[in-house]
Length: 385
Image (cartoon, rainbow, N blue to C red; front, side):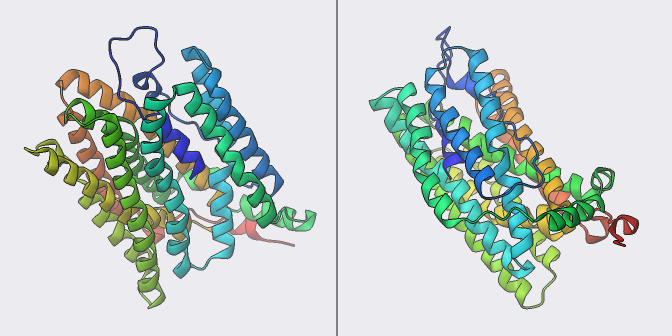
């Protein structure tokens, strides 16, 4: 939650297109967060060290005054937070059965959604009442509050030397070539890109849309962004749990999760209705509802693309690859939305692009996400003398 909240804080202010020399949101929007794939990260001190570095870099952003320094800082922050996702999914793969993964991922993703939900009104309040440097510094320093409880509650699970050697042999049973040859992996890349495209749009351009085209104040736009991300967090947790219940009753895990994903992508396309809404009330309703319905995708897509259809030895490697698609969506969403806004003069074209990506995600789920196309395990590599 802390990690994603800061990403939302970067986008808490609508762009001012006629202020030359200012590092503003329209510049920050084109800076995707870079994740560097780490396939096997100890969740004790190394994880904590990465978190500490992330907090310090986040706070240090307050001193940045040039675009080049900002780009460098974002790259360093991306490297520091790279341990989070692969380590999390390795833990889930090792400790949760299939009928519990959706619930676990729903809880994890709730933190990721509540970050933007809380970040929106916090960013608006801090911008109005303080300054950008204060906001950056506070974000990093507040994150340090979580470091002590983490070290107290989480035990290091770094494997012994024999176990580490066994794990390396297992990992070699699914080489990178097998992972890249799998349609399931490519389907996951498409799904995560399409999902993240809309998610990043709501973090960055949606507040500006509400201010510039719908006439809301900055503080009110932050409040409605909170409702949107709070909605997706609640639905994500409930959808993950509901899918787990069906799976526990004997339903096919892949089919159940695919149904939730397709329904979520379809429901999120209602964002286009917001672009054509004749009143502010209807526009706000469709904006909140569309992102809320995307919550049907969240936990089930994470489970399907990163755990359910992926052999356990390939979870870390595949998760790193999937994060590349997620991060890439941040840059593409920012650039493409800005260009479409410039070309069309309104937010209708950016929302039509979202509609197209959501449909693509639904089709990818139905066509590519099949068990028989999962990454192949090499029998020779699995043999242990």
